[in-house]
Structure formats: structure tokens, C-alpha cells
Amino acid sequence: MLNGRPARVPRAIYPGSFDPPTNGHLDVIERASKYFSELIVAVVVNPQKREPMFTLEDREEMIRKCVAHLANVRVEHFRGLLADYVKSLEADVIVKGLRVVSDFENEMSTALMNRALSDVDTMFLMSDQKYSFVSSSIVKEVFFLGGDVAALVPDPVMRVMATKRATLRK
Ligand code: PNS
Image: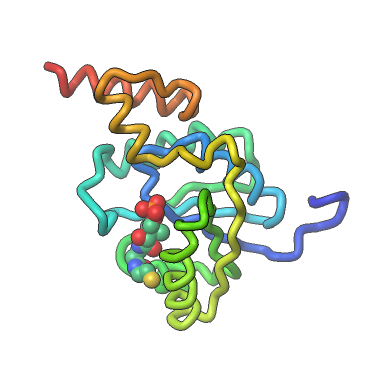
């Protein structure tokens, strides 16, 4: 429900690498979940950019713990083209977060390509400004060099990261 009225768009997909999920991701998920009847957080199996630090299982599990309070959110994963996955789920819209203006350059071409491939639009939510500098990459770098990122990631993510750091130090 949004302002007491039923949400108009039934099924949205929020895709990402989530390596790891951050408070910025969770903020987008919480806000998007108010606009759509059903929000599927879709973890890409193999991010193009790099080998993920966290396994697919860890990434899915971290998100599941973070969204347990949101009844209309579920977590899945996908391989290959997002457009094919979106079509297979008969989703109505793709959701993306924008932190800063430079995010838009890449996201614009991606959104246009995804629409060309699947006829599904992408809707953007501006990240809360307190998370505009927060990315999975910067969180990983700071944490694994000993910095404090507790304010930037949800508690379940912090715990998995701490376990990972302990494993890497052995
Ligand atoms: O969290 P990220 O790494 O910014 O998410 C990027 C993601 C997973 C949304 C993007 O890489 C993606 O959609 N990958 C699936 C492959 C694909 O469809 N590529 C063509 C995009 S036009």
C-alpha cells in the first residue's frame, strides 16, 4: 500500500551483484518495496566486472536476513542476460538506485538496452544522500584494510564480512 492505495505496478526486479549488500542497497529495497506489490532482489551469479568476494549463497543469505521484515520482497539469483530473466518472470519493471550523477551515464545505456531487449522499463530511485559515497567496492576495501564500516552495512552483512576476514587471515 502506498498512501493507503494499492501499488499499481505488480512485480519489480532489483538486480545487482550485492558483493556485499550495503545500507545503500537496503535503503533502495525498503523504499522500492512500498511502490511495488512484489519486489524481487535478483543477485547476478557472475558479475561481469570481477570475481565476487562472497559466494552466491552468502550474498543471497545476507540479503534474505536484511529483508526478513519486508513481506513483499523475495531474493533470487539469475545467470546470463537480465532482460531474459525479467521476461521469464514476466516482471513489469526493473529498479535501480542512483547515487551520483556519474552513475547515470552507465545506467542510461543499460536501461535503454534492457528495454530494447525485453520491453521492460527501468525506474530509478535516488539513493539517500547519506549513502551517496557507499559502494560494495569501497566497503570491501576499507573493511579488509582494517577500517570500520559498521555504519555502512547491515549487521548480518557485518557478521559475514568478519568471518570472511578471519578466514583470509589464516
Ligand atoms: O550491482 P551491480 O554490479 O552494479 O549490478 C550490475 C547488474 C548485475 C545489474 C548488471 O551487470 C547486469 O544486469 N548483469 C546481467 C548481464 C546483462 O544483462 N548484461 C547486459 C546489460 S544491458
